[in-house]
Image (cartoon, rainbow over all chains, first blue to last red):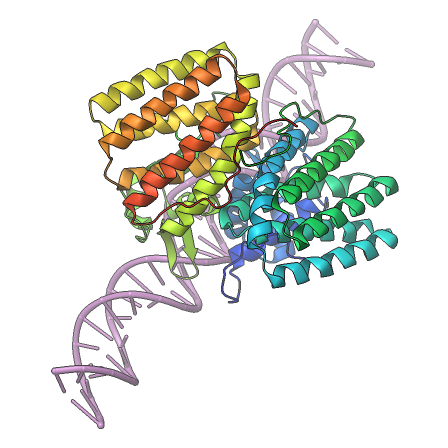
Length: 238
Length: 238
DNA sequence: ATCATCGATTTTGCGTTCATTTTGATTCGA
DNA sequence: TCGAATCAAAATGAACGCAAAATCGATGAT
């Protein structure tokens, strides 16, 4: 299992019950164990995590703020339905950030980032060859979250991870197209190449286009399409 | 008092206690009633809102996820310290979104958006002339949040509002420079002009530059500076 | 046969209580 | 006098319990 969000307490102290619950429930939802739109079963989760309803409900409020669950007054919490229009919004928002992340990461990434990314990228290829779609999805998220971390902006990193978890959720719910996976890996190669030589505009463009391609592939599986009429095109200094 | 965040339940139903608490406490923090870094007094807030600790604590967890408060294990919640480095990150993140918002709002804004914005802009000028800095700050947030809403992307709108509330918090804590206010109003004029004729690239650039200018002004008050070395420059289609 | 109505059961929201930890004052020793 | 140790008081985190609301099933009417 992997750390979906890198927003835990900075120090490596024992994570609080609250943090454990938030991470645990998030994982359940992102992995698709709780169906889209399903009611979140408080009692069952209480037993599963061996806690009372109070901390569990507190965790649900936090996840609601994160967009993973929706609170219905007097009707509890449901797994936020991930409808194509919303997913399209997620991709649009992510695209706006990808551009910044590319520009910033190219400038700010250090050797540790590069090394970690090379490792994740290698694992990603392995998972793709093994057709391990679950590992592929998680590693893919880790890859992009690591690039986001390299942009050295905690706000962006947190927002990006939150959006990424929605994409992750969609990925876990669809059938993966081998051709798209191959193309995606190729795009990752290009991203790594741009990052290695710190070509910031190139990296920004590649991340942005990769996001758009991913959006088209995933939304296509949902029978929708991603026509980003906002297309920011390429970015250059004047 | 104004609606800081437009994330409430879509229907105009009676807002739940939870929503009321989240909005109320957010307001208290944004307005600076609770000092930066101060411990959040649970008992006092319980009396103030006439609720028990359970729903209040749930609200605090949600606000923690929003970045307004920090949860210290076994030590309760404190108002998240708004240090210049973090504020700089907020402005950077906001700049990434401003660009998208400008491109999208120019395409998607409808007459209602335009009308509302003209009204807010007029009120803003009035507040500026009256040197009512509190109204000015709130109206300024409303102005930018409305533009964000015109981008027709709920995800972006919510994220933007969250970042904006941090800026709002900083604004309430500083002395306003009359010259900067005048310059800011002039920039707003330019933004409105670009929006009226739906000049998307122009609008994106103006919003981005306005954000940077605001960042410099506010961070300057904190004795820091905003050197956005990531500068995205102007954006054009290839 | 379908739909509305009523009542039992479940679920939700929130107040209350309890154990644990932290905080602050006080005492004791160097 | 200063600092460490000690203990009372407060606050935090989590469990529990209760009232209100919603859900589900059965019954009856059309």
